[in-house]
Amino acid sequence: MRSIAAFLLTACSAFAQFKSTVPLVVAPVTVTDRQGHLVDGLTADDLIFFDNSVPQKIQVHETFDPISLVVLVEANSASAAILDKLGGCGILFSDLLSLQTGETALVAFSDEVKVIQNFTADSAKLTTALHDLRVEGDGCALLEGVRTSLHLLSTRAADRRRILLVIAERRDRSSKVKVEDLLHDGELQKTTIYWLTYSTFLAPFTNRPKTKWDRMTAEEKAATHAQQGKYKYPYPEEEEVLPPEMAPGSLLSIFTELHQKTKVDLASLFSRTTGGRTDSFLKQSALEEAIQTVADEVHRQYIVSFQPKPDAAGLYHTLRAEVNGRPDLVVRTRAGYWSVQ
Image 1: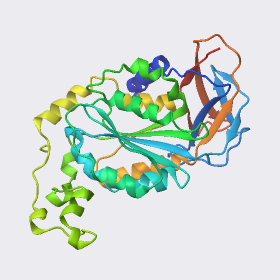
Image 2: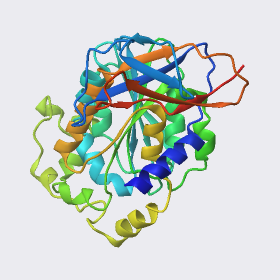
Image 3: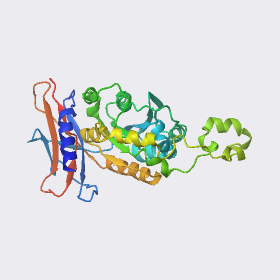
Image 4: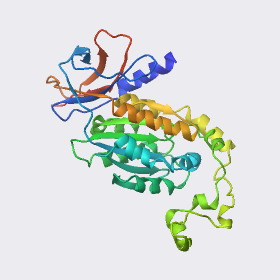
């Protein structure tokens, strides 16, 4: 564990390259006790925020600003079992995470990246889009998916909080984008990234067999069941069990997962860099609990801002936070930023 932590700290120092293009440095701060319970009620007097180890005069803002959320989903053959679990999560993303004043977009990636649903506050649209997601090849252009998501968030109003929730493997397999270039992206300093990841080898064992009815889109059901009105009941031939899109425990998934472990852990890197977190899940219930955990944290964070002193352009500043007189509390924030003139 210590060697992993040391690697991540080194990687974050090298890659957490935020370019400050506004007068203020803004960072989310999450405070928990040793058991992981969120701590509320802190003020600017309680929090000590360090820029290159120098305490700053800070402001603590309410977390009530409307949220723009992008859900980035891996949609390749290795993640077919995960797509099955996401069908009913639209309401969790819109009504639990982004809330009434928020908006959510859905992006999927495999060999290519596609915007499946642009920003909407309608959970029914998200649910339909998630249910209709299908496997689109074998590639894993993960970094390109992150870049597209950041670009999508860059189109939103400046007063909105920007959250990227990635549901994918930890590592990239087929992007042409370089991680160093992406981590220099100025949009990254405005976005908090949360990552929900899983084992592509184990996930298929947790799914029940799918029928033809399960695989039909809403449009296909409407076209063949018009006489039923709401087309809720499958015909007998539509209840036939389909073969799995990828056999559980296949050699391909085993070797793919083993090979991936030699690459950079992007989940830990991006979540640590932006002040988010990474969680793992396997079953449907664990996925829903992980989304709930992210929602709780997002809505109970402290949003800290301060005016940085003038500095030469291109210098990296590390950020750190703690609670005054409470060494027992765990405090998490962004890794740092780059100064500009």
